[in-house]
Image (cartoon, rainbow, N blue to C red; front, top):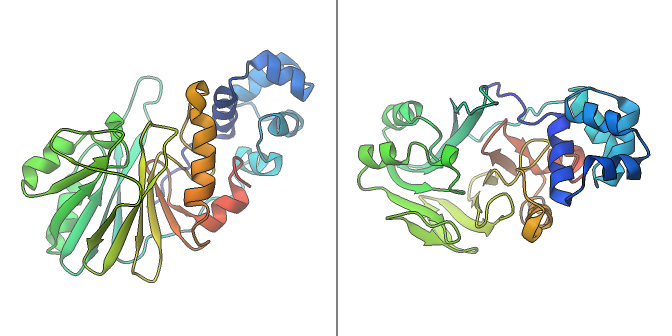
Length: 276
C-alpha cells in the first residue's frame, strides 16, 4: 500500500517551533535569517540555505530535513505476514487529503485490532476472509480520527474487549497502564506509555514472531512525530518517550504509525529530523 509520508519539511519545522514555544521572529534571530525566510519555509518554500540555518536552532537534523524537503527517500518496510494495515480517508477543514491508519494482527485464529480508523469495511473483510475471531481492540489514544468507527466495531463484534490508555479513558473499556501484558495466540503484547502528543497515549509492542512490531499511534511518524504542545512540557516529554521507549527497540522493529507509511526503528534513527 503506497501511503504518502504524512509530514512535509514545513510541518516538521512548524511542530518543532510550536513545541519549543518559539516565535518566528525568535527563530529568525537565532538562525540569523530573515523573518520572511522563516515564514516562507513554513509555507513550504524550499530554501536549502535557510533550512540548514534553522535546523540546529530547532534541535533538528539539517541533513535529514533537506532530504525530507527534496523527497529523497521513502521507506520500503512491510508488515510481517501476520499483520494488515487499513488506510481510510478522514478529511478535516484545511486538510481534505488526510487519512488515518488502523491495523489488524493475528496468531492462529485469534485476532487483535489496533485503533479503528474512519471505516471498518476492509477490516471486516480481512477477518472474514481469514476466518479469524476478533478478540480485542487496542486504542493508542482517543483523538477522534483513531476512534471514529468504535461504535461500528462494537456493534459488529459485541464480544470484543476494548483496551485504552489509563490516561485517556473510554466508556466500557479496560484501562491499561505502562507495562501491561496481553496475548494474541503465540504473540505477546506489551504497553509503553508514549504521551506527549496526547496526555496518556500508549504504544503496543508485539513480540513472538520473527519481527518485533510496535503500534505507535501518533507518537511517531515516518520522518516526523505527532504535534505536541510546549505547555506543560508535552513536547519535551514526547521527544524523550520516543527516544527511550520506541527508538530503543531493535533496529529491525517495524513501526506502525497512525498516519503515513510503516517504517522501522533503524530508518527513523538514521533519517527522522527530530531524532537523527
